[in-house]
Length: 317
Ligand code: COA
Image 1 (cartoon, helix red, strand yellow):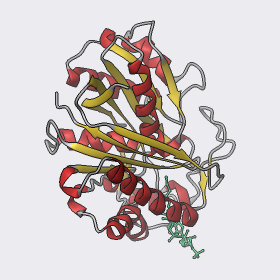
Image 2 (image 1 turned 60 degrees about the vertical axis):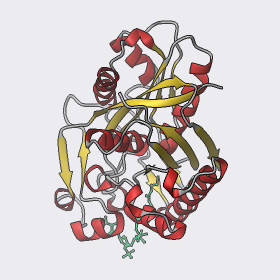
Image 3 (image 1 turned 90 degrees about the horizontal axis):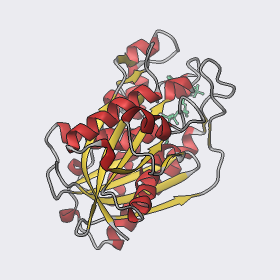
Image 4 (image 1 turned 180 degrees about the vertical axis):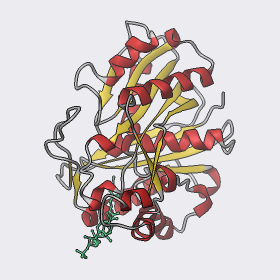
């Protein structure tokens, strides 16, 4: 099967920044409580005129421009999201319409909650393998402010909105591996959505999910490294789902891993579910901290319960 390399990313973030102090004006909480338990200081929330789709469109346009390709070169579009504007058409089909992508390519949404970007990457690899085209457009996008109960302090302080897109290119030589897992569970649930009404908002068993997340992260990293015979010398960046700084720190400690290789951005974006991994890669790219040939471990875990790991190579622009 064809390997992929990631050649460029793009972000689509809402403008409104909501700090912990802002949250404390509406629910009984404090910056101190939120920051010490999660590492989060602020998040973005969509405002009037912004939505899952607008973030996705901006992210996709930025990624296509950064990759220096034209939309008709794209062989598939796969969007990881569980908060789309519409259940149908899918976000992927909306992007196909608005970006002018070819009509004869697969376009679909993947719902694997916070592991979504790893699932979407794996699906895109399968599609590209059967395509004459060279490029895949893969997104992680969430408008979690739409499904969170803003009066429930146990959840509303944790999440944020955002989207990011990645352009993958077929590559014979790039190191690539991915694996996925799931264990059906209702420890994290979210009911149906509409524009105005949330029949049953996002809920989770925080303590159980914390335990699961540390275990899943540890397993994904050790499995990926063993399967690909990697040492820490071979790994340039570890990009984990940005749920909570304490989950990542606990895992670094358990693995005795080099802390500086683990990127964190939940301090200013909160937990953006499927968007968190591509947003983190896009930030690394924007900061000039990632170079052609770098090897990244991507680690996702979350609702489902699902988990997944990917070894990818950054190809540069
Ligand atoms: N501000 C202040 N107090 C809060 C609060 C908030 N935002 N949210 C909950 N509390 C209170 C609780 O009501 C409870 O009070 P009580 O002891 O009087 O009943 C107390 O803080 C402790 O609550 P608890 O839920 O036990 O806290 P915790 O230490 O487990 O931390 C999480 C809560 C959510 C931060 C933690 O469980 C966690 O990070 N879980 C993983 C969640 C996650 O990342 N999920 C996404 C995975 S994809």
